[in-house]
Image 1 (cartoon, rainbow, N blue to C red):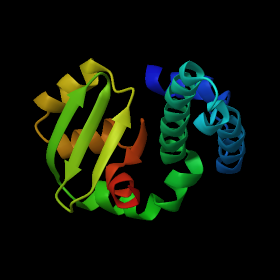
Image 2: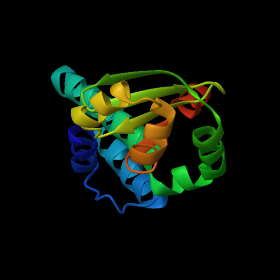
Image 3: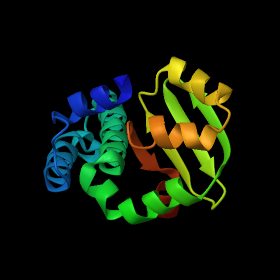
Length: 149
């Protein structure tokens, strides 16, 4: 997915980057681009503010999809995808957001439109998603994001 690639490029990491590496790179970039370092030049300060916001967004996004983060919540994720039904879903720009009956919400990235159409047309969207979406695409919990915000 383009968003993931852009964020990795911004931070200069690959998909194998671990949480500690992300944190180290994030801190280093924030030291370089912190707006307070550019107090003398208002134009540079504005650029630094934009850059630092992009770095913060990229860092938080990549942490939310990191294998270590997903591993920490794997039991909860497995319980939700196996036992809870799908109450709603929405699709935009290869991102599928699935709302479950237990209150959890997950985003799946890089889902092709053809797979989404098959999900819509499936006799049982839950069964289709368990077979073709839940374990095949990078995901993150929206509930966790709301709780930490």
